[in-house]
Amino acid sequence: MAAMLVCLVLFVMVGGCSSDPEGRSAPPGLTIGTETSLRKLHPESRDFTTGEMLRLAAARREAESAQILLLAARPGIRIESVTASPLTSAAGAEIAAQHILVERVGYVTTRKPGYEVEYVGEWPDPRFPFEPFALEPDRLQPLWVTVTVPPEAEPGQYAGRIALTTGDGDVIQVSIALNVWDFELPLCTRLKTAFGTWYTRYVAEWYGWNTVPDTYLMKMYDLMFAHRLNPMSQYDRDMWPPVRHLDYCAEKGLNTISMRATGTAKPEEFQIVRRNMAELAARGVVDGAYVCGFDEWPKEKYPYILETLAAWQKAVPDVNIMAIVPPNDMLAEVVDIWPVCPVHYDPAGVNYDPEAQRLMQERIAAGDEVWCYIGTSNRPPFANWWIDSAATEARVAFWQAYQHGMTGFLYYATSIWSSNMRAEPKYHFDTMHADQDALASLAEGKRWPEVPWNTFTFYNYNGDGQLIYPGPNETPYASIRLANIRDGVEDYEYLAMLADLTAQLRARLPGSELIARAEALLAVNPELAADWTHFTDSPAVIEAERARVAACIVAVKEVLNDE
Image (cartoon, rainbow, N blue to C red; front, side):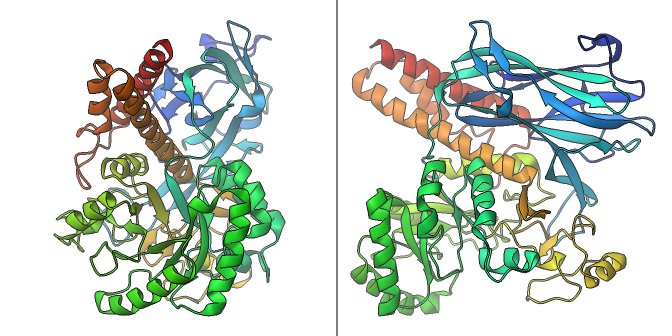
């Protein structure tokens, strides 16, 4: 996440401007640039900064990403290795090099979708583990740099470097300066998240498994929690994560557990959930447990939903009940969690309901949880995180969620790979590859990345329900969208942390001038997001506002500690 003032700085020094300790410098014909994580650059993009600092901010226990950009003017330039030094401070503190990750960004070619876009073509999205690669002349190649600040890091300024070595032995030095904010993000975020993985369908189909092995699930958990997202399976009957993995996931930051997807009320279902709730109680994580049902069912089905959920409420009273329907009076007494799609709450939405906003606020006031739910109906002018959405939209969505009093975020799937594993449709939403050569390769059993990625993962939406790629060696690969979402979750955490500190300040020092400053920030600057359909696409606006929130957190903490 980019920020101004106090920051992580990537300062690239090229050619005659700098050299490594042995006197070698970047080769002729290679341009180096830097960019924030809040921009998606196409291969032909040239509007990036060359040889400038990229300013970012990081609290303790926070991951921050930025881009190093490589542009070759001639063939024959290879990047053979990347190494990072430890980050050290003037006071002698150190952040080990293992906390710096460099990945190569890949491109996928989008198709004209069923919503308005400014660009159809190659978009950056998959993040590949670094391996030696050749630069293609006149094609921009981003490297995705992520620094994860450990919780024990001392606040202050750190310095280090990244060295990229070419096949000819030339070394490109990328200097890093990191300023760590003097506060720490918690392991478990205040924002509850539930991002679907649909393990038993597409992952199993892709790798040819009858049952997804635990070795893969552990990799998926690591990837999800590294991006501050709780894994769940919205449509599977089984609890996710399963009991045998609860302890592992709890250590990673688990704060929600999908106990069961249901559309019925049967005694055997109640027994299964009661047994699993006992396992949660033994671990002290009951608060995040919920049963989910009735995904976007119509109003005429509400009487049946009421009857079913009332039975659940009576049979398993200690589990929260989620219904994926708009807040309404009929179900108010049986629903605890309401995932709501923004299109219901703004006149620009195709599903706008003028009563929805009132009902949503009533349920929040009554103590219910209201979560944000992004789906295919979130077309422009609403924010989304499709491959061809601006990177800023994934960040803005979390400011909007906070702005509207939401305390959770639901997304139905991260691994819909169906249209990329076959030449003929199997599911109703499969839109097959437009490239005939790709279809022929799929028919032969070949797969991505040997076959170009089909971005129509759900009907004609580019990357809907797909934030993760199926890598080789049974390994999931993250997207840059997943990193933008992570940063949005952390933005939300900044706001939640400031709200908690401000409440303490109001109770202890009601006359503090910091209270008005904090309250203005917590209202969310309308320049960043005025409502669901009017929000910024400027990285600088997001960077500046987040820096103001962070600075206010530090200031309030100092006053409370001194008081």
